[in-house]
Amino acid sequence: MGATLGRRDRLRVETAREIKAIASKQLAAEGAAAISLRAIAREMGMTAGAIYSYYETRDALITALVSDVYTAFTDGQQAALAALPAGDVAQRIMTFGETYRHWAVSRPEEFQLVYGAPVPGYRSPEGGAAAAAEHRACELFGDLVAAAWSLAEHPPVLQEFTWADFGPEFAGAFRERHPELPAAAAAVALRVWGRMHGLVSLEVYGHLTPQSADPTRLYRAELLDLIVSLGLTPPR
Image: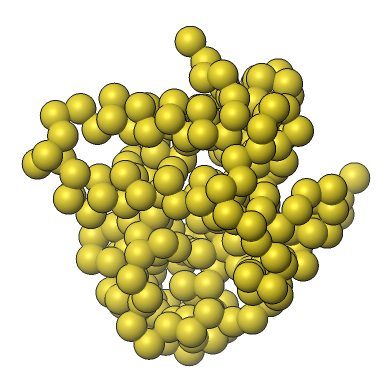
């Protein structure tokens, strides 16, 4: 059983949560570049010095938001997948993709924070909670490919790859998590991400709607084709 927080610690946790909530409103209204610790302090009736005791810089606050976004995204995906049989890989890929799109379209500010243009002046720190949360989200794509690879009669290898074709950090993490898979599987994982991400990105940024009367149907067709390309039978 975890230790009970004292009154002062509870107040600090609640204040940090309120700071992030107001920053999220700024993010939704004007984008990440508009996040301002001083503006948040004014809205909360705090002094600038007081708010800096929670987040030393704007970058620290943005990093906390990035960590929260990746964590919520991953938790949501894992909850959706937990409702499905582990062996129904095609349906799990379909559900994953549909959950991915729903998150991006319903929370575009979060999607743009982690997958959009870099925030002006922001430098993401190496390591830490945000990087760990990002890696946890990325692992989901590799896990889907690993499950499909084990079932496909003919794995989708159209071009040979070696581990030297990938960044050392990505290659190391993928090999540690899936030591049974070849480098070509890592390439497939990146391609799966790209295919799930592509139409979603066009939709979030307003480039798809003028051309498609039904983005949901179009995206589902993309997912079905993706499943077939992985050597699986698509769900009905």
